[in-house]
Length: 102
Length: 479
Image 1 (cartoon, rainbow over the protein chains, first blue to last red):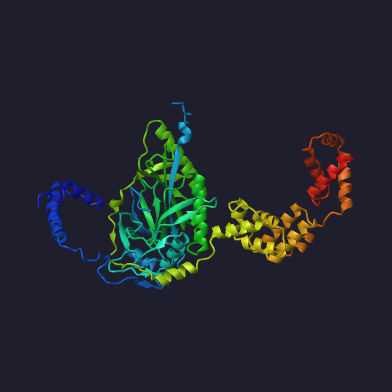
Image 2 (cartoon, rainbow over the protein chains, first blue to last red):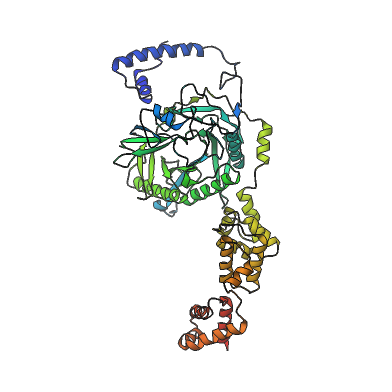
């Protein structure tokens, strides 16, 4: 293979999305390791899969469903006791810089 | 070349609006676990290992959620397809798993159309299933999300089934956006998919707004407006955003693609964050759930069981009453489920237009159902002149709040028809008491008619029929 499959910039970006802070030497190390992983994927991609139907799931199963019937959950106090912090029956988490998805 | 009229640039701006509606489904349990789907319970009392994202727990899909999602899709004329769940990855504590299970490239409902009461068609891109997030309360001295000291999380809502209905960018005004939401809400309620209450958050709307210099120009850069808690807020926020973008562009600036927060008190939108690109969510198919593939007979059964939709009900009522289908009276009657009453009253011989107007005005906020027979009798009392219009309205309002027989209510309130000679006498004494005004009325000051009607009303304790008084005034004037 001539073209590098992943650049250091790609690794920095993916790390940022995963909220990982990498040192420069780690960026180099993971760039090389991820290139190996992607290289293997490229070898698999080289196989002729023209006759294989795309799958959304490895199991040959669809439509596994349950009835809309309530079941008991867990005790709130027991769950909150395992959290790092709780307040007024809620989980207490650090302040948030940016908001999430819709 | 002859000179063409110059177009006014200011008037040429066109707004382009698309709406994303999140609708909580009226199931008994959550999307992937048996925790109750209830609004307003004590925090974190409807949680289990699945919706708390505890290691080793596995989701199992709720059949009822699929049925309700199919009802929504079929009511919007969408195609129900085999679908696949995907993980939408993001870091935010309102989802304990660090991803939301949604649908991405294979949603359950594809395509569709929503017709506004005025006949405008708004395309529906898709209506897919996903799980709701938990509820965060931001605590801190600033009172804002940014810079809050900490947040408190309630996971009761995490995992509640949602259908996200995405419109095409076919909406062109704030009023049309409001009409779209009102119509969609009516459909969601009619098919039993959701209670669709914006104030409780079971219906949430985000608006994508852009402007362009005319209907043939390419779409401009859009901003997504969030925190719209009522249909009124939606309209105000869109109007603000359109004006903001036009002012920005006309002053040489450019619109940036971002999410903006609507501040209802301040009446303005403000920037929240730059919009993340779609690939930043790193969607991939959810390995813990298998594809959904409802068989054709189930889809057909759901389609056949759909109720008569609001648009069809408006058309039927409009036909019966003789008004246009987008007349506000018709829209109100169907919106308040009063169309059946008006149709039944009309079938029983009541004046259709009178029935429609009285029901739309006096029963729209009724707290109890009025029996068809009582409604018909009340209308007959007004038509025959036994009650004046004002009296009939008061009696009907009472019927809709405390119930009862119209004749009994009228009698309790002393609403007996004024004998003709008593009315005549009241008119004569009013004329005698105000000779100056009467002279001016006779000489053509028609608005003084209202003055005399008021005097006669006061003298008769409101029992006089305004129309009869006006007729008597005309008679006197002609003498």
